Image (cartoon, helix red, strand yellow):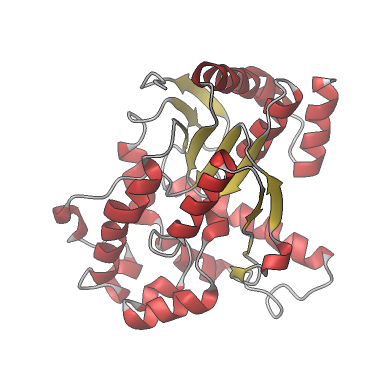
Length: 305
């Protein structure tokens, strides 16, 4: 196995700059080695949780770790995004009608099918058959048909699940009183939406968190960086749509700048809460600068398996 060749191929596939190779060699190859060591010590499949704000690079890191665990350490790994377990568009519209209109927008806790996620994780780590892993199409804002789900032979050695809200704890009741932005002030003045989200974290999301063996966080320097990073993601999605010969705004759910500005406000509260609360709770903390470069690695908690 030629690690350098494989890394360069990964950079091309992910459309990453050449400078990312240094990041891989300095930070992520050693991380993959530590994860492989944890797996060997545990003697069972591991579930790794990866938190990072939107646009922080967590999806890229998850995919890279899967490749490194396979190529360098001979482990069968799979990366999952909590985004692929969003409720269908119809289900979210029903939730919006029954609970709060803001729940039509995907992303916040309460808009995922956590039961399906828990079932999928159990099958991947404990099953012995082929597992159908859901996929979500963000361009159409809906779950892909089951015929397009990924087929994975179980069990796997390592499951890496990533998400912007993954691991974020519930807030104290008093923290929910004051709106954090114009969206909350105008569209959730009584706090019903944010209280519903908080209850979901307390309940079914905590059951998910309890299964995670190792936590990794890509820590953004501030929420102000998130809009810029998320805008870059949306532009990449638009490019993909154009390559398919579709009209970006007529045929898909790709957002304009104005729509994105409103969209990102849905996540401000929990993103800021995560940046404040999670760094001291994870096992591997990568601190990022404004350009998503890693400036430090800390290990606030030891891994205990």
